[in-house]
Image (tube, rainbow, N blue to C red; front, side, top):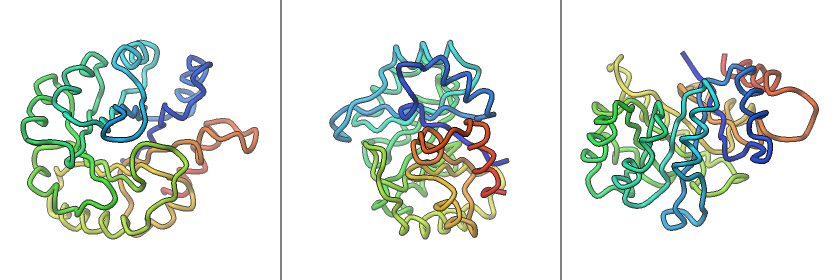
Length: 221
């Protein structure tokens, strides 16, 4: 069953309670929460207290993406938010299995993230140990970047690798995901689509989040 996740960093932070209600009404399945340390990526976002408070304000499960160095330390910090998933970057981990074990120790589903330029083979050793793979279709750090089409080949390669494993991890895509870019993935659709400014939180028209979600679902189905 495919899912839509909303990138909460792109929401109106001054009216967040209203935003959460609108996302719930739209049937959004996950809240994608980017944690950025200003080191691994050149931006800062979303501390543990913020996400713990967010968890208490919504029924939508959290999907935390650690765009950080030393992910082991950040898993410890952010487990207080009781997320459904915690993703960490294979590129940032000295010992990826240690990070996976730490995430599981908190009864959280581990996910491993992959930047656009990193070969997909880098995550093969961990596919039997994670619940999700976060495939970045832009470089993490900032919204509004162009979708990197070479990632399409990596999605296809990963799906082929997982074809004989019905219990393998879900594939999530993040980075300028919308009707046009979903169309590019029609032959190899991932499982979870992270929507940000371009597809969900924009102010281009007066349609509701529910109507925007329906438009995306029409592309996915």
